[in-house]
Image 1: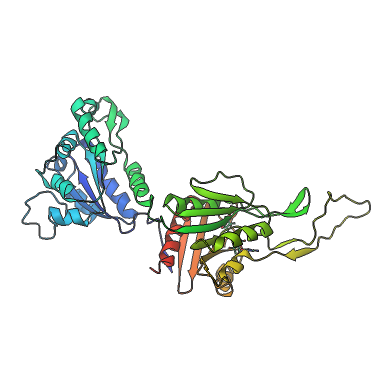
Image 2 (image 1 turned 60 degrees about the vertical axis):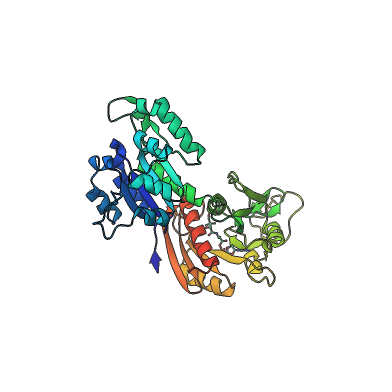
Length: 408
Ligand code: PMT
């Protein structure tokens, strides 16, 4: 059993190029945050950067020797500028000082960082950080415009009080803001070409025209999965029971009420999606008959008997498809013997993956903002510890994609 934390940048190779500005001190925290998310970091510092934060500090937080000089023949473990330019998946220059921006805009290669810029074909983003007057200078603005025209993301700067006492625009963005921008950069489109069909929310099983049987599912978990997959570029169809949530961007949402309706829509779409995720809390039973008129209380009758009949098992019917069967992921909402029931469902329904959701705790499961899942697949398992449903959605999509591609 593996414990995990959010590894949104797992395996990503990031060169952090530090310029000589006071905000360089934030780069220690920035490195730590990137590493926490699974990134591999190599730090390159300009000569001036070393005056603001020591290479020793950056070596300690990044776990690797800091690269400082173009002609550092003594550094056996260090890569040269061509090697590191090829190694990088992404380069972030932070703080990008007026001087660094000017030298790069002019195409100079007079230190290690500028030569890496010239030699890499990885995306390079700039996080400007400098005095507000220097930032507003026409020369700096023209240089930034040049970088923008070349297609480089320019992240920030922010406004506020500056180290020199000035107030204005020029503060480098905070480490967590930069991390979020890098995460967004990587999650943009890596799942384009993949299609997911997801069910979410409760179903309503009509008793009469005004009453129904249902459950407490809010749809938050299923919507978070849909949003996470869509944000990464996947084509997503969301078959939703009645919920009070906005449709995530770029998601094709089909509204249904009952299990029967959900079954019909899923049958229509399952064969043209590569992955099916059954997150909906589908009612197992429905009233055997629906009264045409509102049922009335009858004098002298203190009890009423409802006869229930079984709904179709949507998940099982998809898992049993023989043509164009999608990779099939189920959920198991349980209040006891969670692992046993989940493993039984995995085997009985012939699923590729099941997400066991212990719904006996109030802070997780139905209608909560947080969740924890225990994933089981035929030859492994993994816990996604308590986190927001948005976060769990991202992690789960990551795990599903790895299993789908046979990488686990
Ligand atoms: O919507 P939220 O408030 O965010 O809450 C999320 C959740 C708790 C509803 C969700 O995480 C969850 O656990 N969903 C599955 C709920 C459920 O119905 O579990 P189950 O163990 O009864 O069903 C097993 C699986 O079969 C599920 O994938 C379910 O979608 C599917 N099923 C069940 C019955 C049925 N007739 N058809 C089905 O497809």
